[in-house]
Structure formats: structure tokens, C-alpha cells
Image (cartoon, rainbow, N blue to C red; front, side, top):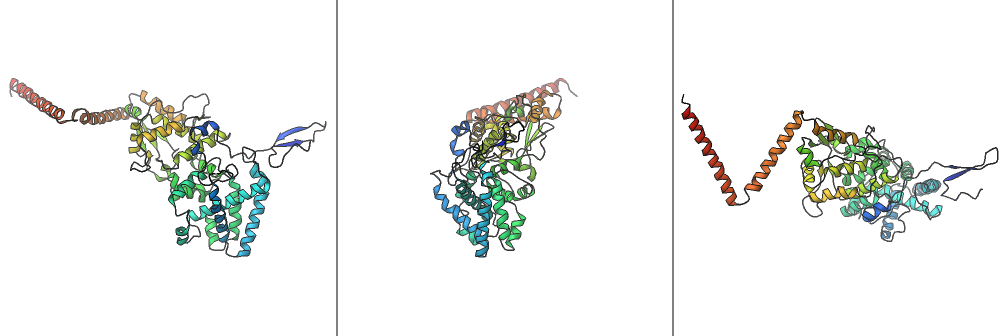
Length: 463
């Protein structure tokens, strides 16, 4: 039975310690965390899950569309070790990194959902080069230990289009390496760099550096990243992004038998029933779009900035939730929640004006209100919710219109109706000069009729 296991793919252990000579098979703990995107999702929008310029890890290593970037990866690896001023120390650090990655190659191999057709040295080389590339990219982007002229000379960091594409590629589910690889490399490099650069390394961890790289794609601030990333962990970069948004404590109601997966009505209809929407203004809360509250008839939602890489990042976060057994479906729940609010472009326009959804309307690669409404609907296609994380919120909102004695709700209904009349008046009665004249004449006539009635009554009842 000693031929049962295979190198690098051994998920089962043989237990021959039974007293009766029997053999049992015990499944080893799995580190599985990097998956192939389900075909159902891949068929809907393949480019949202496929790297454009750079492959990370073994899944897309032989992708013919991205080989040109291999030179940049090896150049960045060289630049990383050049941060160590002395040549001998630099070589020593490289050997230490290579030995460490080779030692953890089997553990890293277990993280992938499909068999990797590479031997241990080939996989270790990919992990080493890709890990060093990512670290140097994050360090350069955050300007740790860099001179200003370094940024000007670098063809990657100085190119906004390339950065946006890299943010897309590095957040793909299939384009990941274990986060433990990055941490191991970072710790070794940190021990070899000279002062004062070592102090800068000590102030940051890999999670912070990674989030700083993605902050422009996600609309985050450095303050929010620094405050939350110090204790943040994850299995890979995409998992780090996922964990960054999760609430500190999960108090949401999860009920597999609960059919709720959104609001019963869209934004415009909810306004008519007396429910208001407000964008949160607090900076810390504003950046966690999952922090949604309902109080006194008001749904308070943090601003979600929709940027170029937003759709791709959301789709891959959802794909990760679909594949991972122990991951809550918070991102998918949020997308389903937004889909229920966005039934038309008018709903998107309302949420945009109330600073709940932000997007560019100025031209170029801008989005229209209709585009945004369609975006959230399309991201729900092919997604199966294991649990809906906003069921308590939706239950409260759905029940609120039935509380007809609530004066806040009645006041909101009156305000909405008044705004509708003010919008309908110029649209229906001031579209051309003739209708305008007719309306003015009717108002004047009504005024004269009122005066005539007043004086008639007054003459009938003299003082």
C-alpha cells in the first residue's frame, strides 16, 4: 500500500496501526483556497476572470496572451534584491528565499483545486518569481524606499493604464499564489535590508501593502487601510480583499429556509411607501459598503464607488464565495440587495444623487444610469446564494410600509408626492408656448374667479 500517495497531490494518509491488520484512509487537512472559476460564471463573462497582461501562479502560466510580462516580473525580482545594498548579502537572501519556497512547495500545491502538472522545482520557481514581483510592485507603488526618480523611470508604475490592468489581473481568483509565500519572502527580505529601510519595512505588513496597491480601484483611503489591515489575514490576495470588507462580528440573520434575497420593492417604489435613503458621511463607515443600517424609516448606506476594475473584482469575490465552503456570501448578498433596489435607470439616478452609488458621468469610459442598473443584474446571473446576509435588514424594511401610523413615513410620502407634482408640472404643461399660455390663462382665470367669489361673499355679509 505504500504506492498509494503521489508527490504533491497526496490528500490521503494511510493508517496501518490497526491491531487487526486492517487499513484505513484518513483525509489530511486541506489548504484548498485557489479555485478554477465555475463554468457557469466563466461562460457569462470570461474576460472578467482571465488575466490581460500578467499571470500569477500556475493556472495561467502557459497562457499565450501574457508571456511578454515575464521579463518585467524577473526585472522586478532583481530590483527587490537590489534593495539589499551588499552583493554578498543579496545573493545570500536570494538563496534563502529559494530554499524557503522549495520547502513549502508541497503545502502551496495543496492550495490549488486542480492538479498542477509541474515538478517541485518548476512550481517553486513560479512561486518565487511571482512572489518577488508582487512584493516589489507593492513596495514601489507605496513608495517605500523609493526615490522620486524611480517612479518616473519605471514603465509600469508611471503608467495609469498598466496599473489599472494590473489591479484587474491581481484580483482574479485563478491568478493567485498562497499568501504565505508573500509573507515568507517579505520576512526574509526585511531581515537583510539595511537601515533605515528596515524600519519602513517593519511599519508595514504584506496585507497593508497589497491593500494600498488596490486602494484606487476600490476607492479606499490610506487611513482606513492602516486601521484595519494590521490584524488582517487571508489565504491569498483576493481573500485579503474579501476579509477587509467583512464585518468585525457577524450579527446578521442566516436562515436557509428564508426565501428573502432582497427588498420587495425598488428604490423609487420604497420612496413612495415612505422609506428614505441616505448615504453615510462618516469616512470610516463610508468605505465599508456592507455596513447598511435601517433606523426610523431611513436606510443608511455607505458610498460604493464604481470604478474600472470594480465589476471584475466583485465577480471574482463572488466566484471565491461560490467555491469556498467556509466563506460567508457577504459580497454576493450585497449584489443581490443592490439588484433589488435597481429596477431601472431611475433607481440608479436616485441612489447616485443620494451619494450611495458613485460613478463617472462625464464621458469617455463613463457609465450611464442604465449601465449601472444593468451591471448589478448581470452580476447576479449564475450565482447561488448559500445564505443571504441582509435578511434581517430586508425583513424590517419590507414590513415598515405597513406601519401606517408612523408620522415620519407619512411625511416622507407627502414630500415624494410633492416632488413628483413639481416634476410633472413643467413636463406635462410647459412643453410648448401654447400649453404654457393655456396654463397661465387658467391660473389667471382661477384667480379672478376666487376674487369674484370673495367680494360676492363679502357684499352678502356686510360688516
